[in-house]
Amino acid sequence: MADERKLPQGRLSRFARLAATGVRAGAGMLLDRDGGSATSVAKHAAETLGTLRGLAAKIGQMASYVDGLVPEEHRDAYETALSTLRAQAPTSSPAAIRSVVEEDFGAKLDQLFTDWEDVPMASASIGQVHRARTLEGLDVAVKVQHPGIHRAIESDLANASILESMAAIGGARRFQTKEALAVIKTRFREELNYALEAERIAWFATMHGGDPTVRVPLLVGSHSSKRVLTTGLVRGKTFEEACAATENERRAWAETMWRFVFRGNLIGGKFNADPHPGNYIFHDGGMVTFLDYGCVQEIDPVRLRAARTIHRAALVHDERAFRIGVTEMLHSKPGPLEDLAVEYTRQCFRPIFESPFRMTRDYAASLVGGMKDMALLARKVDDHELFAMPADMVFINRLQFGFYSVLARLDVDVNFAAVEASFMREAPLEAA
Image 1 (cartoon, rainbow, N blue to C red):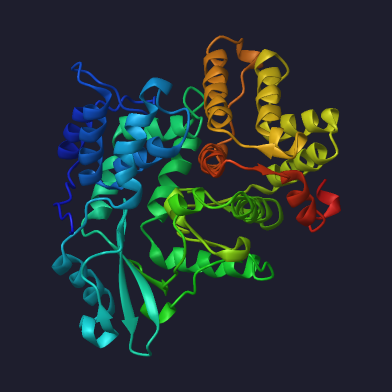
Image 2 (cartoon, rainbow, N blue to C red; image 1 turned 120 degrees about the vertical axis):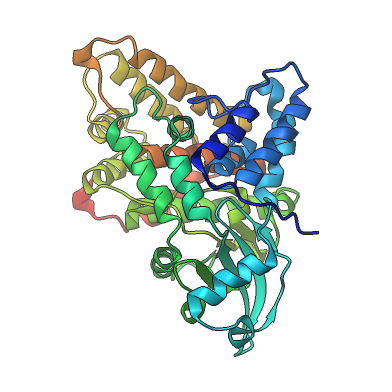
């Protein structure tokens, strides 16, 4: 049954509802202010954040699966309650959704599709997805933006608590600069432009076109616009079903996922910064379809060269080259903060240095904790030792925290080093 709720758009109304959930700026988590049980507070938070949609819902989605954002003692309660935001956020009405489609294409819905299901197959923070069939007989998934979501997003971007929570999830709290906050605003405004997402789908399809296990949805450009995105309908196992599959299946999928993320990152210089568990569809033979290309980060060329140096050093266990690469990537300054940054990055690369490696939820959570430790140290070091985290690292960290948490739930040993070595030969040697 559809869960239709009016989308609050104004800054003050959204702020008041957000404050009622107990979201604390900079923590990226939800707190109980009135002594209620964690379960009841989590359910209330899920309902409120779902109704708000926009960036508020994204905070709830990330808290539901990124290990380390919510204290260990409350993790199960929040994951259970907030998982509803991953699978099915509150929806917009059929009439409102039909109106968006018809306005964008200047035609009635039945002139565009022979079949249309008013009950969405999924609903998320910015849009919802409907099954349909084109006049040519192609079964498609049509993503349509929630009416009023542009104003809601702008209200959230004007809310310091929302921005600071997003910065915290990306590891930028206490490191944040105007440049980092500008990157956050740019990325989330881009998510409102489905025409841009269509271009990215085409780029990723070309990037991974030679990989038999990586699938990118078929773009149906004739039925896509700035607020409507149509792709071929993808059928397969959900993330929850994949987590219950055999060990060999889970290992094959984890290998494909690692190759998709890091080949795109290190060879293509771009990555999808939203590792939401609902963005994967799993198929036999290790094949994975990767959905949703709204949040994509391009890597600065200088940072890309340093990243390739770091990954190559990790593959051959060259600790000295690894340290040099990290300091070049971060533009760090000698001192205790730089030492901790190198140590932290080395911890992030354990899956390569220690392959085969089993990603665990405790390990994923430890990385979030390590970022908090660096933020605390940054408040204590002398000015001549302090350095700002590069602005574009916010989404690299968001990807890593989320992606590692997703892999941890597959719970399988993987030779990540072998997977990476298979494509690193494509990287230009002069960039090392």
